[in-house]
Amino acid sequence: MAKIAGERGRVLELHREGGSHSIYRIGGNPMPIAVPRHTEISELTARGILDLVRRLSA
Image (cartoon, rainbow, N blue to C red):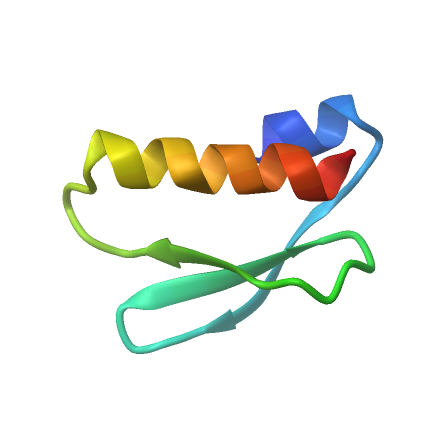
């Protein structure tokens, strides 16, 4: 996620830690990105998170 944001000149920031998720934000964008803190996440979830990061970094 940080690499994708960095390639677009943005900074990935950890906003807060939730119960089972970490909440990130890209630069000054108020849209949160929830990332589960599980030992494994599904490929579909991972792709969705990366797609969201790409959209918010544009």
